[in-house]
Length: 263
Image (cartoon, rainbow, N blue to C red; front, side, top):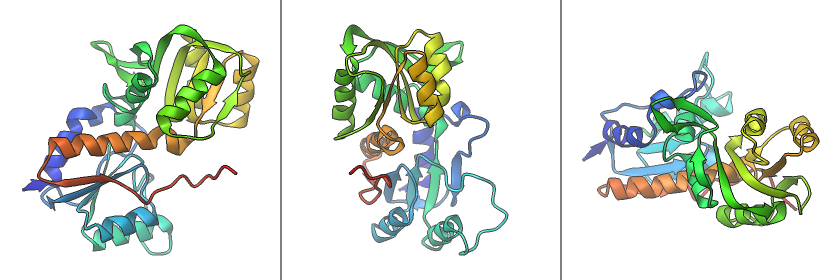
């Protein structure tokens, strides 16, 4: 029989919590390590729909990318969305675990997965975390091995992430060859990408003024959306845990959706 504690040990092999940013809230956030786990759900974010799915699916543990709770709480009541979610989870005896930025920076984490999926070579972290391990750190950069028009690079991103549309900063025929990646909200990585001579930054989302800054400095942006830029990683994590712990049933949430709609 697997327990929350045993599952956490497996996740820690992929995403050690020591890699998490200081401001992050990671680890076991709800529950007890001795609770048994027969059914496990992964998701990007815990929403009312995800909680309902977990309860209906008799999940014992949710492994979420975005922590719940994320910020410190003074109370847990039904007066807030976070409070209601936590009360429902606790009532259903469902544990919650998040690795978040530890998974972002891990050797086989979300950023690395996207870099490999897009065919990048000579992949290195944008911000190396460990001088003794060049594969660990925030973000990724790598080369394509050829000059590619921005529109073609965007098509590759759409294909890998199964998207019909995304947002671009830059001209369609603008040539890119050295790519920076920061899944999620990574506009703050722009300066580092430029410092490393990247001509394109792929990140889920950023603000308007960062888009203007990138345009002024001749760096293309590919913005697939926060949801799409990270959701694929939780599907992969579900597959990984299912193979690693065959005695439990593992699935990626089927109910969570990107709240932003393209029309």
